[in-house]
Image (cartoon, rainbow, N blue to C red; front, side, top):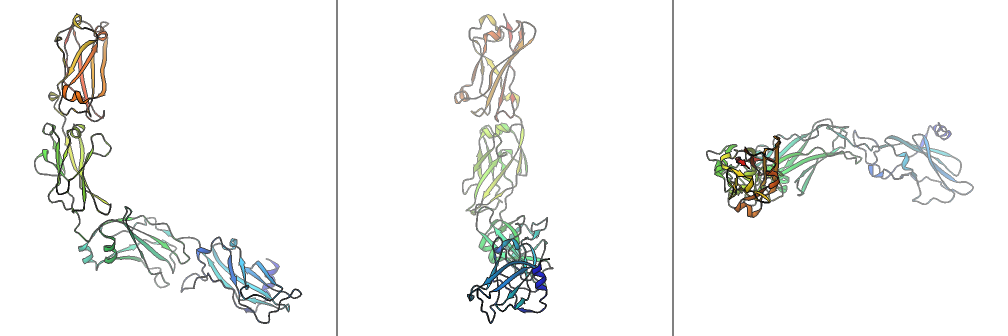
Length: 481
C-alpha cells in the first residue's frame, strides 16, 4: 500500500465534503450508487471539489489537493497563486474508469501546512449490457391482429418480455414495431424498472393508436434493453405479426387450373392433351384481397426451367399459362400459387395448388421419317453425298424452347454396335417450329453399317432445357446394299 494512502488513513476525521462530478447520474432507490453514464468511456473524468476558506497559496506556501481512487493516488494539483473559481477540479485519466464500484476522496493541504481529508464519494462504472434470454423472440398470443382481436383485448396487443440478465432498477425495454420492407417503424418504451418491480415480469403494450398509425400488413416486433448507464443489449429475434385492423384480413386460398376440371382442391392432375395451346389459372371467387393490391400467379418453382410469373390484370381473376411452361413440366409435379403485393411493399402468398402433369402419350410424339426418294428398305447404293436425309415432323408443344437430339444406331460391318449423333441437343429454330427438322446421316457412317440389318433413328426432345428428355417413336428401316 502506498505511503500516501497510509498518510490519508491517519485522518480519521473527514472534514471536507465529498468530491463530485457533474456527469454522475442521480441515485435511485435500489440502483447502483454514483453511476456514471457510458458516454464518459474513453474520456478523462472531471472530479470537482468545493472551494475552501482561508485560502492563500503562494510560491513559498503552496496549497494542494491529492486525489485518491480506491485508495491509490491518482494526481496532485498544486496552486502557488490565488485559485480561480473554475479551477477546483482534477481530471482523472480514462484508464481508471474500469468496471466496478470506486471510492474517491482527496487530501487538501493548506498554505499553513494543515491537511484535511474529504468524505468518500462512491462512483460506479458499468459498461456491460444486459444479456437477452437465449429464446429472445416475443411470444404473441396471435399471429394476426384484426379488429376482432382488439375488441376482445381492450384495444391493446400485450406480450411478456423474456427474462434478461442482469435485471436492475432503471432498466428500460425499448420495442420496435416495424414494416420489414423499409417502411416506417414505431418505438415503444417501458417505464424504468424500480426497486419494487424489477423482479416482476415485464410486459409490452402496443395500443390501437400505434397499430393504426403503422397501418395494415406484415410487421416485425423486436426489443432491446437499455440500462441506466446507457448500455444497450443486442436486438431480440423479431416476431412476425400480420396486422389487418383497417381492413379485413386477406383470404388467399389456392388457385385452380381450369383444364383440370372437376371441383377445385389443393391437388389436381392435368392431361397435357387438353393444354396444347396453354392453360388457364383461376383465382377463386372466395379469395379476399383489395383494389390496391397487385397480384401475380406463380407457376412452378422460381428459377426452374419452365417456371413463370404472370401478372393478374386488375379486375380479373384469370391468367393464361403458355404451352411452353406446360411442356416443361410434363410427367412431373409443380406448385401453382399467387402472390399478393400490398401497397406498403410487403407480400402475402396464397395457399399452393399441387399440380401433377401427366406424361405425353408416346403415340403423340411421332418419330423421324425417311425423305424421298428413300423409303424402307434403304439402299446404300442410292445414298448420295453428303448422306441419308432424315426428316423429323413437328410435334405437340414444339417451340423454340425445345432442345432436339437425333441419334442413329446399328450393327457395323465388323458386327460391333455403331452410333452417330447427327443433332446433339440443339435449340429448335423458329423455322423448324412450323416446318419440321431436317437432318442428314453422313454417308460414311451409313457405309460402316452391315447390309441386311435394320438401323434405328431415335429422336429425343427436351422441353425444359435438358432437365428431362422424351423419346419419340423409333424409325427402324432395313438397310440393303
